[in-house]
Image 1 (tube, one colour):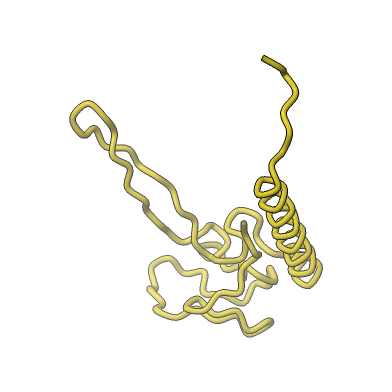
Image 2 (tube, helix red, strand yellow):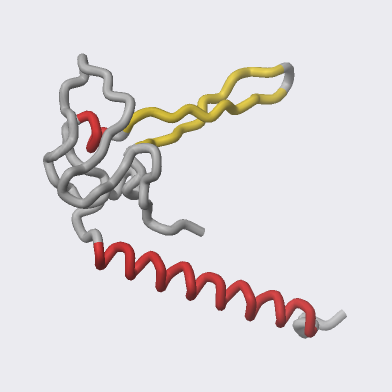
Length: 115
């Protein structure tokens, strides 16, 4: 058996499409990051961080996803532009956060594009 492997036409097309998609997303990411250089790297500008928590379930583990406000929001920084225009009072619950400097909105965050 030969170690030489030839890529099929279908595989080649799929690879080319994926490379084009990756390049497009990278271009969008670079443009977004250039527009908002002070964005929060932890949450990507969303104001929310998510994490998984495992729970034993029989012989496996079931994972549950949780979301909570990012430190940038809790410390009064806008996740997109980094301005200190957000409510930083953790005792005061605010349903809708909006940044007066850049217009970022909690309900409709403009986040860094992802794959």
